[in-house]
Length: 188
Length: 182
Image 1 (tube, rainbow over the protein chains, first blue to last red):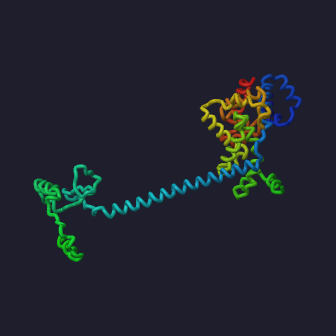
Image 2: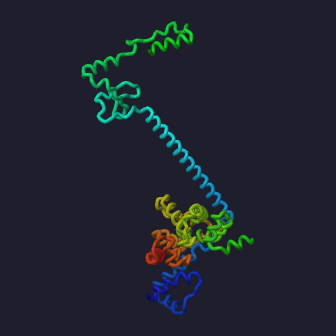
Image 3: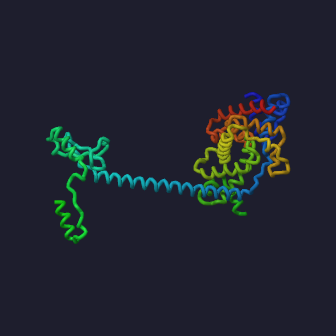
C-alpha cells in the first residue's frame, strides 16, 4: 500500500474528527493529488451539516406510522376484494361445472353412430353448429339412407303453423280439472 | 423521560423488534436517531433542499412498511440510505434525467427558509452537483464512507456488493469528483 493509499483510507476518519499524524500531514502538504482528494472528502463530510428537520421526531414518527397503518388497511381491503372475487369465480365455476354435468348427454360409447346430430341451444341443428355444441345420438337414424334423412330434416324444418296446433278458443270456459284433462290428452 | 432514556440505550435491532411488538415509541427513537442523517444523505445526493423533509418522511414510511426487508446484515441506517437512494432514483427518472438541483432552490434567501442553512456557497453547490452526476453506486459508497464513516464491509452489505467492489467504486467517485469539482 502506497503512502497515498494509506492517506486516502484515513481521510474519512480524519474528516470525522481524528487528526493527521505528523508524517501524514507532511505528505498531504507535498502531494497535490492527495490534497485535492482531501479537499473533496472534507467538504463532502461537512455537506448538509446544518440540516435540521422541520418537525420534531415524534411528529414525524406519528405521521409515518399513520401512513403505514393506512397503507396496511388499503392493502387488506384490496386483498379482501381479490379474495371475494376469487371466491365468486370459484363458486361460478362450480355452478357452471354442475350445470354442464347435468345437461350433458350421456357419454357416447366408442364408435357411436354416424348420425349423431349436433344440437344448438335452440334444440335445432343449424349450419353454424360447431364441434363445441352438444350432440345427441339417435340410434334409430343409423338405418336410414341419405334420401330418407334429407326428407326427415325437411319435415323438421317446416314451420310450426303447418303442424298440429291447439285451438285455445273456448279454453277460458273450462274448469281447472277440465283443463288438466285436455292437457293430459294432448300429451298422450 | 425514563422511556426515552431506555429507548436511547437500545440497539437499532432492539428498537425494530420493539416496534414490531407494538411499541410506537421505538419508532420515534429510530426517527430521532436516523432522520437527520437521512436528510444529510438526501441533500448531499442531490435532492432539492425544499424536498428533503418530504423525502425523509417518504423514506421512513417505506422503511417502516417493509421492516421485514431489514435482516440486520447492514446497519439500519445504511439500509434506510439505500431506500433513500431508490427514492432519489425514482424522482430522478420522473424528472426525466434532469438534475434535481434547481436555480430556484439555490436562490432561496438565507433567511427565507429554515433550510437556508443548507443553501451553501457556490463551491458546495458544485460539489452537490458533482455527487448527483456520479453513478448511483459510486455516490452511495462515497457518501456512506465519508459521511457515515462506514467501512467497506458494511457498505458492501448495505448495497449488495463486495467490499473490494465498494473500494473500487469509492476510488472512482473520488477521481470523478476531483475532476468535476476542482
